[in-house]
Image 1 (cartoon, rainbow, N blue to C red):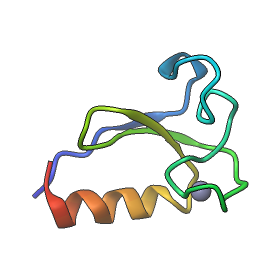
Image 2: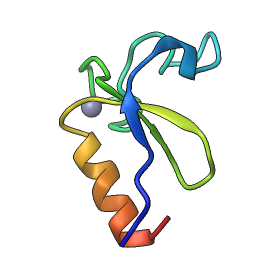
Image 3: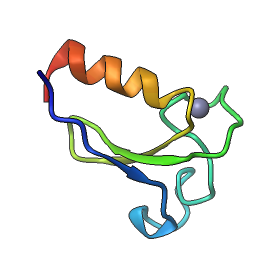
Image 4: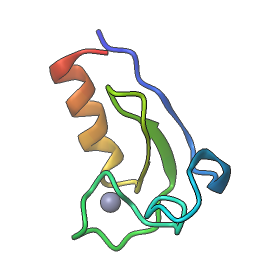
Length: 67
Ligand SMILES: [Zn+2]
């Protein structure tokens, strides 16, 4: 079991000037041009934007590597 840290994306979750704050899906890397639907927190405690597709890769990462 893993602890998932997910909420709906909000610009206030990010530092100004970051890709996530600009409304980009950063969990999917630079190749993803979808708008982020969620804010997820990675294992280092950093917030990242994730679209509906890439939020699944976040869940897989957490289940693989633990919280
Ligand atoms: Zn994405």
